[in-house]
Amino acid sequence: MPRTDVEGRPVAVVDLAGVAVRYGSARQPVTALEGVDLRIRAGEFVVLVGPSGCGKTSLLRVVAGFERPSSGTALVRGSAPRPGGGTGVVFQQPRLFPWRTVGGNLGFALARHGVPRAERAGRIAELLEQVGLAGTAGRRTWELSGGQQQRVALARALAGEPELLLMDEPFAALDALTRERLQEEVRTLAGRLGTTVLFVTHSAEEAVLLGSRVLVMAAGPGRVVAQLPVGLGRGPDTDVPGLRSSAEFARLRGRLTEAVRQP
Image (cartoon, rainbow, N blue to C red; front, side):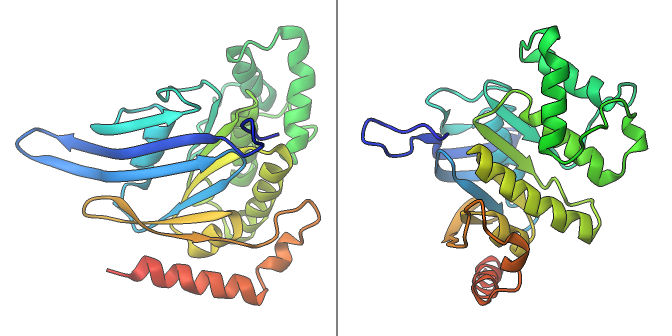
């Protein structure tokens, strides 16, 4: 369950203030991000959407602790971000070990999180059940479809029971039907586990379906220029496929598309 303060309000998992990221030399700097303020409460599903080059992935890398901001402050659960440390990451590509089985990939992640060897088989079975891959622990990763491999990558990210899950366009390379199915499953799974999610996408439709809040980014330099609260149902009984055909979904998608296209 999401953590709360003494008054029962969700606490901030991510807190960025004035974050800038610059690359290159001092003489010819390239500003990927400038003046980004972002506060994400526990249990939120926040989606970053915007054109290529607007700094979405750079922002995600700062939150993951893969790089430090050039200026400004970044806090995750009140401390400087660091890889691991209660944060799971799912990349655009699964990045699985091809010489290991599905269970071997998950077992490696569990070992890194300090799960005793005697408990790993049970945890592997639980993780695969969560992502709809029950019974596949003994299969080789190259025997799986692209969508199945990405499910394994998601299970690996969940192995440490992260409070924060970062997802960088994880479905971009998948076919349309597989992508839709995984969108629906991730939305439902995040709600059931109470996981805080920061998700990167180029798709307005994906952003509206998944997010409880959508942030629009623009380039030159990368910054947040608008945000859209999404009031679509998120309860356990929500008809997620049915949301796609609702009038409210179409309205929100139209608003977001217009916001992204603004100069």
